[in-house]
Amino acid sequence: MKENRNLAILLSGRGSNFLAIHEAVKRGDLNASICCVISNIEHAPGLARARALGLNALFLPSNGAGRIEYDRLLLETLRPYHPAVICLAGFMRILTPEFVREYKGRIVNIHPALLPAFPGLHAQRQALEYGVKISGCTVHLVDEGVDTGPILLQKAVDVRDEDTEESLSTRILEQEHQIYWRAIALVLDGNIQREGRRIIARPQ
Ligand code: GRF
Image 1: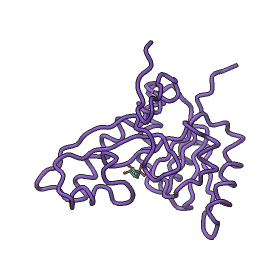
Image 2: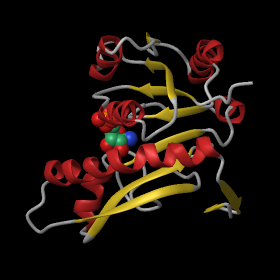
Image 3: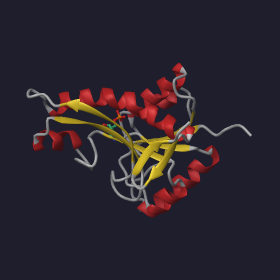
């Protein structure tokens, strides 16, 4: 049977991380195929880009739906696409434990700070306000908490004295685009093992 390297992308906004993943697939750096792009926001630019690229692009409205109900619908919607890995790329919802269990160890998220520092919203602003001199980005497996799952890859970014939230976010985003597809490859290739919270490369 053909190895399953299907990626489902969930997004709510701009979609630059989705596009970086798509580019990596197109270049042949990431051996994977994007089976669907799902957005809970109808006019998310990322969804429009996915549509323009001819990908399976689906709008699944979250307005008014409860978390449990919505995530069940999401599970149903994803099932026919047989995703091997689910990539959260600016998906502004917290997944239910039921959803996380179904794809345990196969959901990845990118966060614009060096976790466990500055989880949650506005991570770049949090970092600036705290006064750290180094921030960055993190790709992690998703567990039932918010930005708490085991870390796959991180990249540090210097915070400059003249930085604004916008300038810092821009430099972090460049690094996000570099590490996200590499972390996805680690999960798809299965060349990792877990020791407690630590994810380490499996000896070849
Ligand atoms: C990124 O900063 C990512 O780290 C965070 O949400 C933002 C999404 O940006 N989770 P984009 O939609 O991928 O451009």
